[in-house]
Image 1 (cartoon, one colour):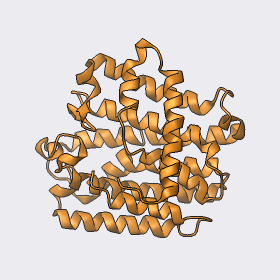
Image 2 (cartoon, one colour):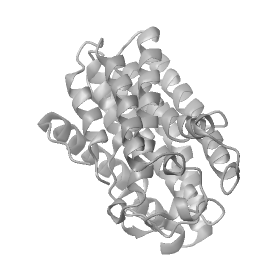
Image 3 (cartoon, one colour):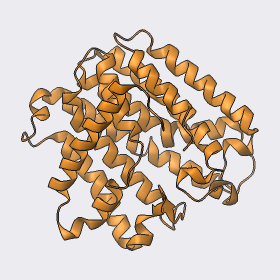
Image 4 (spheres, one colour):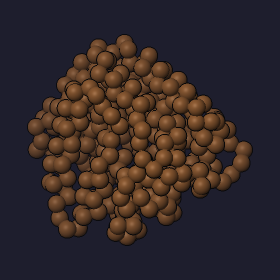
Length: 295
């Protein structure tokens, strides 16, 4: 993902520095080698950046949102570790490196994912030791925990993954079923990312709801493009693996050109939905960078 906006680039560096400090503090021991491996494995950090940028867009500061951004990265990384397992997508590369169960073992990867998911909620609950934690009232913390639990659980990512597995190598599904898969598997966590940023930025409930919906729209656009890019070795994953596995993808229902047009349509809806926020220009730059990515 190419980001040309210097402010977004600065926020990305700020988050990565914060994440590195959290990894060093929480996962410094020999028993946490798998967690270090997967958290230090690069990535675009879309969800944390969306959280920070939305906090700014509603008129808030990014500092109180750093803990939420880190929790989102932990949950997203857990989901990748578990998705790659042999009982799920059975992939052996991620971001150009061996997946966790290949580099270590299936049991170690499973436990590392469990730890990341649980630790995300501990981080949101707060220990009171970080400067940014002092800036968040307990009511905002509780609202963030509720957002993340809803997005990650049985009505969010877990449901999306179940539906993805259910429709693999089955006939009868169309665009409505595919959109439902990715609204939950990808869109719900992106929706939570925007909503948590809005909460950290002090937005009222109606704006938080608005930001959640914006993130969900962005999530579908992101996934449509992801299916197009799945055919490319530039993704760092096994090229074309979803198609070969019989998964329901956008390219199974439309041409690459039609899929890109579909992604652009959802992106336009997402942009239109944030234009009423107090400071949306940088957020719109970020949205456009996602549509223009090549990996």
